Each structure stands twice: as structure tokens, then as C-alpha cells.
Amino acid sequence: MTTITSIEKLSKYLDKIVKELPKLRSDVASEQVTYNQKMEDYLTELRNYEEVIYEIVKEKLAVITPFDENPAVAEKYEESEKYRSILKLTGKDEDFEERFGFDRTVYEIGHAKDVDRVNEVLKDFINDMERIGIKLVSSNFNYSTFTLNYMESFFKNMNDPRYLLIMKNVFNSIYWECPLLLTHLELCVKNLITNNKKVIIRHINTLLDQSLKEVGSTREDIHELYTKTRIQFEDMRLYDPYNLLDYFDNNRQETRKFYVESDDFKNVLASVMDPNEYLHASRDDKKFILKSIKELYYDVLEYQKVEKFKKLFKFLSDIYDNRENIKDNLKEKQKEIVKLEKEKAGLDRKVHFLIRKRNRFSIINKDRINDINDKIKELEGELEIKIGEIKKNHDELNFEFFQNSLCKTFNASTSLFDASVFFSKFYGLLYNQVFADNMIEREEVEPRVDEFRHIQYMARSTIMKSLPFNDTKAVKALIEKKYSLYNMNFELPPIDDADFSKFLDNLDTLVKFGALEENVLDIETCDMILKFKDYEELKIKRIRENLQNTEEI
Amino acid sequence: MGKVNESLIEEVKNASIKDAFEIYSKLFETIKSTEANIVEVNPEDLKPKRTKRGSKNKK
Image 1 (cartoon, each protein chain N blue to C red):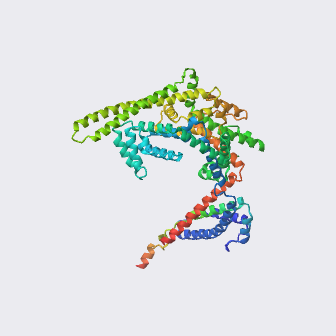
Image 2: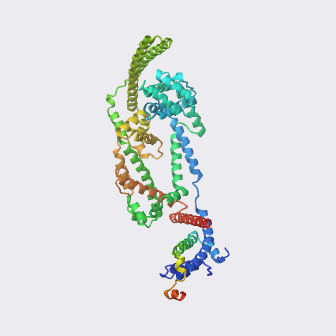
Image 3: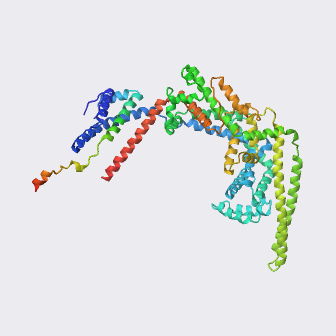
């Protein structure tokens, strides 16, 4: 046993062993045994050192290793989400459907991609209405014979665990008699919402006032409170040492980009500025550069959003430009719908009357029953046409209401942000427009619509709040110009270009670099912690293998 | 623990994290290389080989 009394001696000893390792090739087995014995002796000795030093290093690293995200980050997130849910409730009374999410309910029933979804939405709607204080029963769905039949089965089975399957069969049986069943249900639900408008608005306003009181805010201040909290959350998450370490753990190849002297770092920085300028800058200037890069990162995210949805802004802009020709026919349209609904109700009453009459005849009066059935069929055909007309008029009314509201609300300086808030209130129209603009599958439309509707909750939206909705092209030029004043010269690539993803990735790296610069952790420490983690994993693997070998013996 | 010199342990304990980790890392890597250098020996090769003359003698 060699007596090693210091780190230096141990280090030299290890160098000696490493030098001895390349064994001279020998074909004589006995020499190999002697060599192996020597290696085994070394190993026994080295493992003694390893065990002891492992514990010391482990203890030392435990002091600086973050083992979990700071709980304050999740708390801040919860807080910001609470404000967001309150923010959702704000708005004008006329936007009550959107404020409670009923605009989406109506659209989804009429356009669901499968029957299960329709039933889920219907169930949610019934539960939401109950929360508002409106207990619905099947007779409330008496819009047509078909909606009534369907909803009678629905209420009977909605608490059965197999209700989705049961309702699928019910849907199948009704569909062949009424292919427009979804339209019937859509109009039925829309009427239920409109007929209960006052109660719903009162409920939303009470809920909003209570929630505002709870958090000590007002309708005017809640947006600012949300934005402030959300930014705090985003920063806390970014600067959290555990999150940074976790990022490096999941992206081991990325760590090399965080060493200031490395070419990798210089290449990343070169995408926005001359690396030497940063490297030779004073401490304060470096801080300012990193702060500017962080701002640039969020500006570029806004640019990406504006570019992604530029066709929607163009759509709004075209309507605005044509405002002189848009007439206010809302009252006439509403009157027309009321008239059509009355005619529909009359036809419906006739059908019900004939059904009751048919039930009174016994099976012997077959001819009479056939006559009644023919009449019912004829009336149902007329009903279908009428409901189709009502639906068409509703769609037109909706679009005219949208156009008129736009013309009344918008002016030349309406911001991109306000325009997206406005459009988000018209779920159905937005959905159709996203679909028409992008020619994508229906499944892909919904996430895009959600993404657009989320713009109103983007805490960092300085550009979108400043620039007018009809000048999307200005965003790129303004960003490039602003940062050129900070000696950051770059050209923003089109968002579908691979160069854009690379540019954004580089900015993301630099933002994380900035976070690391102001952190208790540095990149060397992160690397050390992760390397030690690898050693621990190898150690555990070796222990397991040894145990397995012992068991096999 | 007893097999490792106390003054070395003390030095590692008092060293900075960086220095302590550095020596641990070197130790770990040396163990890995040493393990990898152990030669597999076929037990058959260790048995004394019978020579021609030996076999004649036996006869």
C-alpha cells in the first residue's frame, strides 16, 4: 500500500498508473495473470480512495446543487393564472358569450369532428348552465323533434359511464332521419344562451366582481396586474438555478456554447453582433448588451406571432378599408330570424300534432297512418329548409355584427394587440378564417386559433401594443432598426425559414447565458454537477452488475 | 476509511469544490481505464502444455 498524504501525491500516483496501463503485448498467459494481478491491486487501492473522496465531493456539491425548482416559481405561476382567469371574465355585456366561453361551445357543437366531442361539449354546457343557476332538462332542448329525442336520451344516459357509446348509437339512429342534427343542436344551444342572456351576464358580472374583490383589484387594473405577475413568473422560471441546470442536463451538447472564450459562444453571439464588441466591453456594458438581447428575444417572438397571423390582420384591414360600404342591417337581420323562427315553430307544432294523431290510430288503420306519415315527412322536409335558412341568417348576422363592431371600434391607430383581442371574441369566424387562410387540416386549425386567442395574454407585447393593425410589415423593419442603434446588425429571416429557427435558438441561448451570468451557478459548476451525476450513475450501474454477478455465482 | 491516509482526507475536505472534484474525476477515470485494461486470460492457456518429448517420455 502506497502512503499518499496529499492531493498532489495522489494525482502523481494516478499519472503513474495511467502510464503503466498500456501493457506490453505478451502472448504468455502467465505474464498476463501477473499483469492482471497488479491491476487488481491498483483497483483495490484506488477504490478505497474513490469511496472516501466520493462522499466528500458529494457533500460539497450538495451545498451548491439545486435539487428542485424554487416553489416560489410555481406559486407565481398560480397567481398569474388566477389573474388570467379573472381577465377572461372582463369585457362588455354584449361579449358575454365569449367571456364565458359559450361562443366556442356553439361553434363546436355545429362543427365537431366527431360525435363524442359533441356529447362532451353538450355535457359541459349543461354543467356550466347549472353553475350559473339554470338547470336544464330535456324539454329545454325542444328546438325540433330530433333535438328533443336526442336530448331525452342524453339526459337519461349522461351519468352512465358508457354514455358516449350509448349516445353514438342514438346519434346514428337519428342522423339518417335528420342529417342536419348538429345544426339543430347548434341553433338550439344558441337559443338557450340568448334566451338566458340576462341571467348569464348577471352571473359573469357577479363572479367577476367577487374575484376582483378577492385579489384586491379592479376591472381597470386587472390587465396590468396580470401582465406584471406573468412577467415576474417568466423571469423567475428563467433565472431559477434548477431550471438552468435541468436545461443543461437535457441538452448536454449545448453547454459548450456557454463558455465565453469558446468559438461556439462566439458563433452564437455573431448572429446578432460582433463577438469582440461583447468580449471587450466593460462589465456594465456587457450587462446592458445581455439585457438588450433579452428584449430582442421577446421582440422577435412578437415578430413571429405577427408574421404567423398576418393574413388575419390583412383580413381585418380589408374590412376596415371597405368600411364606407358596410351597412348596418343588423335589426333587419334579427327581425328576419325572429320571423323564420316563428315559421319554424309553426311547422314544428304541426309535426307534433300529426305525431300525436298518428299514435291515436291503431295498426288496423294502416292507410290513414301512411297518409299521416307522408304529411309528416313533407313537413319535416319544410322544417329542414327553414332551419337551414335560420342557420344561414344567423351566420350572416354574426358576420355583419362582426363587421359593424369592427367599423365602430377600429380607427387608424388601433394596435395589432387590440385587433387580436377583438377578433378573438368571434370564435367561429376566426376558426373559419384560419382554416381558409392556411388550407390546413381541421385538427391543425384549433391549436392555431387558440394560439391567436392567446395573444391577448402575452405579457410581453410592446410591439403589438404600439403598432397599428394594418401595418404588419413595419414590425420587421422596426426591430432591425432599433437594435442597429445598439450595434446589433442582423436581418430577420422569414419565419418559415430554417435560418429563423436558428436565429431564435441563438437568442434563446444568449438569454439563458444572461440568466447564468446573474446566477449563483456558473457554467463550470453546472458541468461539474452533471459530470458528477454521470459518475454516480456509472457507480450505481457497477454496483448492480456486481450484485447480479454475485447472485449468479 | 482506515485504509486512506487521514491527511489526504483532510486536504480534500478543505479543498475547494473545484479541486476536490478534479481529483475525484481523475481518480474515477483512472479506475475506469484500469478496469478496461485487465486482460482476459483463457484458463486453458494456463495449463502446462504437453510437449512432443513429454509425450514420448510418458509412453
